[in-house]
Length: 277
Image (cartoon, rainbow, N blue to C red; front, side, top):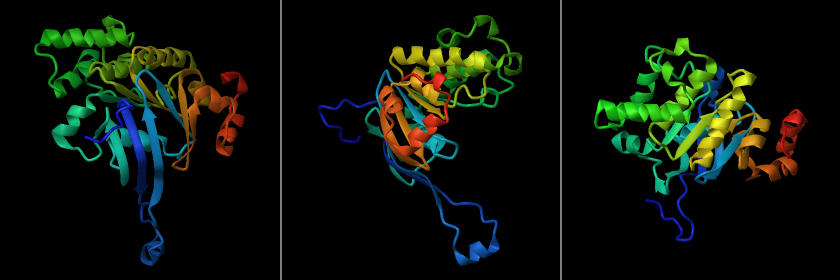
């Protein structure tokens, strides 16, 4: 257990000074011989603190390190250095059953709702799978009740229970993916570009669902390149540029008075009608 100051309650998720490097593929024999192929720093000293009942939007362009940071936060990827804490507990180096037990409390919703679902699983089996993995629900009836509650929270109509992913719309698939995360009752939900592959008409409904979860006390880490979404739905915005955190603060303050040139450039490239300032 990591020491926490007595006047600072543990938050559901905290990242401290994370660094992650990748070695590029060796395609050039001359570079390989000369030793000029150096690791690329994808995340460079990133620190974030996500409080319960809030949404933190991690914003940046392609290649800025957003998804890599999210993968480390979910312990799907190891960091070179730094610390990952769930509820004040250091989980940076946990593995096996110990990590599985903690990961139940932090779930991820991915960008592509079709690729993230098992094509041969019905909606019922998809949502139930997490309960089976974590051995939750003493009986089949108990698991069924948990599945139904999760689907209702995600606004998935119950008549869809026995359908397969290819029989659902894009919005329905993403809501099923959200229900599969909610069935474990996580304290943190990471949403990695959750609406970028949905039609514009479906995006607002899915984002309102994340708002409802935040209002119910779930901490939401929203990974996005879309400043209008961050403006409408986040309490706090953190801006990444080439793996470095260049600006962080209250969403309204960051958008109305951006302090960093990169944040200003992102704002200038965004249609003003979509921003809340």
